[in-house]
Image 1 (cartoon, rainbow, N blue to C red):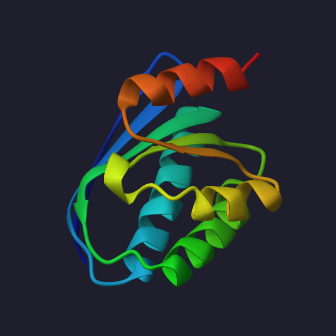
Image 2: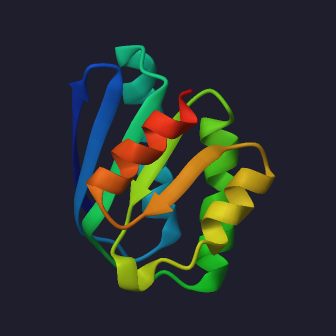
Length: 122
């Protein structure tokens, strides 16, 4: 895996930044599992998953399976805002995850992520 991640707790929000390149959705699955483990360890119920510096193929099928896996990993226990480059956002994976019970949004900036987490936390 050529992805690297770092996490940092800001109040009750875990910021999880991913950099590098990936060849398959399996690598992103592992990123999601690590995010969940780090959030559990920190006692956080909300997180920002920053993928703006992670590069690789993301087809519609990838988005479907990523949304499905996000719902399994995060469930309703961890509210996750995914920061993704605006030109790549389709909301398909988000819809798949939300339709399966996840609290997840895909947004283009960290400011949008913080605003969504704030609104969703009320």
